[in-house]
Length: 146
Image (cartoon, rainbow, N blue to C red; front, side, top):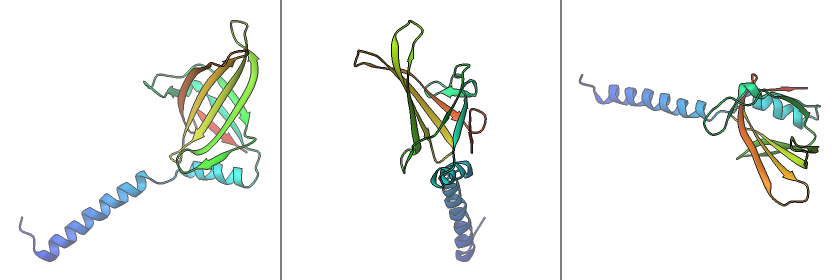
């Protein structure tokens, strides 16, 4: 196929536009992320419902535990790198009978995926124990309601 200068320019322009639009769409912010951000920024009472069975481990992609949980987002922060972040800390007793403080951190990335990281600190110690990191897709593993 022999292309003239003008035809070659048109073909290259189309290819360039297709490549650029592919890059833009890969970097777009998810509509669900924007909905959650708007709800938080306008003072709505936003709740998160998790079904960890529909989440996967961050490393290895194995199914999450058969646990369901929920929380009200009382405080949050938004950064370009982490998206919307919020946390929950509570004291409880673990399965071995030790008093612990559990820390659960959540990050809703701009692509609409929620990362959940859980750690615990046994009361009287200084060692934080990682309990796992999971990735939850919206709306199967994580649902935001207000």
